[in-house]
Length: 148
Image 1 (tube, helix red, strand yellow):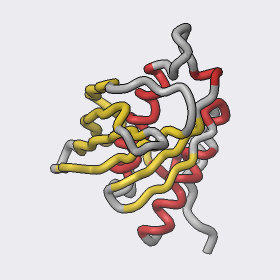
Image 2: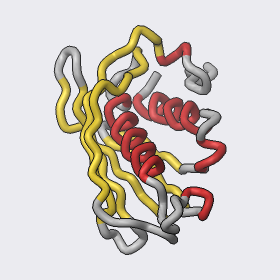
Image 3: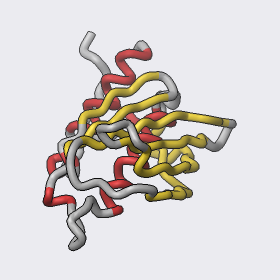
């Protein structure tokens, strides 16, 4: 499998994840990076009419995770630690999360993610540690090797 095929398989896996039917995110994966776009919807709001922190967390975790898993071709990574900072509310427009792998060693992947609003203002940031699980990527729903 080429790098590009691996990235597209990760994108397919994400697109077929049942939770994403609710959020309808758009994901692009590259080596060590990912970008996720989500259109803000009222159904994401808390009582103060802004996007709930759970949406921020999901986007940040997903962006960091895909940046990390872009360089791991065999195993599904799991999040073991994740620190999140919510810096600005958002009530309309688009949220764009950008994930970047910043370090890896034989057992851990460290990635960061930042969410921007449509004006390119930072609205949240996070960093996390990810490790290999026992599950192979090829065994996950949606991730598939290309047909030869």
